[in-house]
Image (cartoon, rainbow, N blue to C red; front, side, top):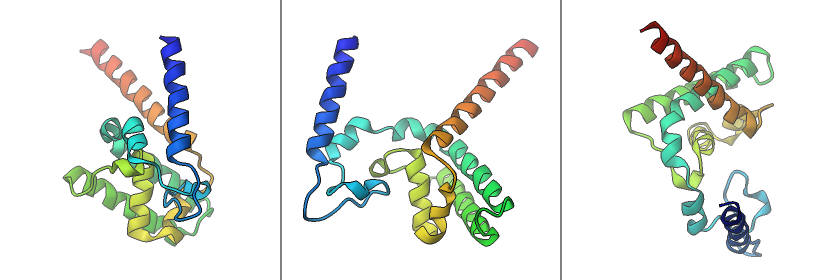
Amino acid sequence: MLSSHIVRNCLNKQIIRTLSSPSAGGGSKKLWGGRFGLDTDERVLDWVDSTPIDTNFAVEDIWGSMAHVSMLGHQEVIPFDDAAKILGGLLKTQNDFQSGDWVLDIKREDVHMNVEGRLIDLLGMEVAGKMHTTRSRNDQVCIFCNFLRFFLFFCLILQIVF
């Protein structure tokens, strides 16, 4: 099992290196793609697609972003007006997601990039880009993990009580 994991990992790296290699023409349009000459090949996107799973906790990811943006505005790290616009965009994103008017896009890779990309679509990079001030990718993942721990603990309490 371990050896097959190592082989798969090496193949993934080789595929990504081959399919995402820099090129003189064009350029990546990904939020993180500044170092790449091309966008990621569709085969790589299919290989690493997490959107079917991420769909299950998109709302919780949005809530985590709302909490973070609220803190940024309250602490005056970003202008209050920008925080209010971002919160409005996040609320619209949540409502549109819950009504089915907006769905996660495999080309945006995961729930975090989908939410950020949606805000950029709604508000522009000048405002939406401020959402991740003082926030890393690990922070976003931890918010979900903490929510999951809380939820599992709550379910355990319910089992004990009932």
